[in-house]
Length: 317
Image (cartoon, rainbow, N blue to C red; front, side, top):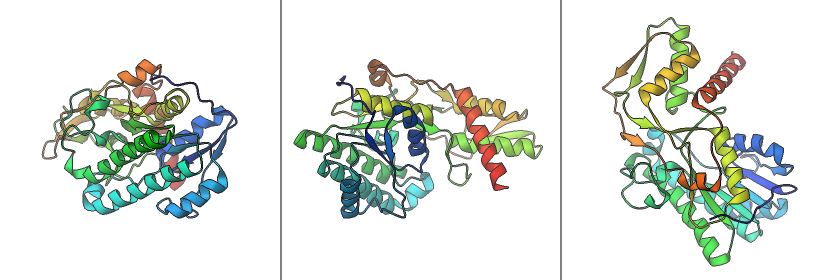
């Protein structure tokens, strides 16, 4: 549902998780909102420590909170350390949401993940698919923690009238992404592999699986814009999907990456590697009805992300 406009102008806004890809994008986006941005370094405040988080929140008096802090990792990390992913994320979100309530924060936006949905959810995935089936086992711990965050926001809203909302972004990419081939997601991995193939004079770029699975991607600056939009214009119990509303095959993505990098080789497949889910597309009907749509095209987003990657490579050496 539409809410009365919530202005960020003149407000003290805490971006929890400001060093991450989404948190950094939120900092960039909030520069134009005439607000005071609050951040705190990990070495100063352990976000898992409820008492310390409550004390910091009372002392710094944020009026709005973007809860983008989380312990994140790829499939291997999620599958290897489920206790860490479940415990750390539960404690981070519980500490911040409780502290926001105690300090009288006016509005909070909790950032979740598309992995909250069942492994075999309908496509495109509507918000009401939540808890309608079994989760993907490899990241179940992380998904359960994020579902708990949604439910905690809903509980504080129902019991105490707190204006706490939740947003679930699709697969994100952009500046600040992780380009380590051991644990990166598909876009940064393909960008790095195409870059190295071009640099080393290779004749082909190899992608995992058949190349036929379909995936949805959203530039992180679009995600940040959507989160600010929801903070300003949305107030409801149910979470909101944040996505582009379109998807493409991994083959199509590979060719788009090759074009941006300027690699003229061929695209080949390692079919010994798994395809994963045939399609994962979230419905963006709800946020579209509220009046938001993404502005960054895939080609423009890939070009900008590759430029950022090259800049980091030059800095490193």
